[in-house]
Length: 115
Image (cartoon, rainbow, N blue to C red; front, top):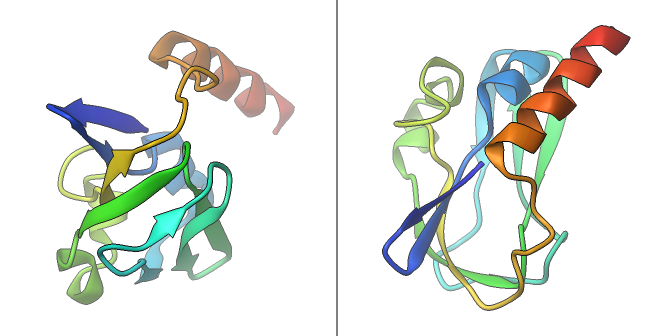
């Protein structure tokens, strides 16, 4: 998910994604000031059953990192949409290709049916 806060975008993973990943035990987050191209791996989340990659939503610069996740990575599971945010970004690229909430919910529903 991507949430707008003034000219900053806060990035995290959805409740569905954290459920699929399982209990997160380590968050490998980028440094503040790091830049990424759209769809480039921005960070990885390690769980007891898998490693998940989180991709940059567009060309961006990391302006803040959720340092709390270094000590408490499971916050990604317990509060994925609030306290478990990953990074704050300054977007320099185009976001028009992203799904809105309704499209994502439809996607999740389709994924759930495949399981």
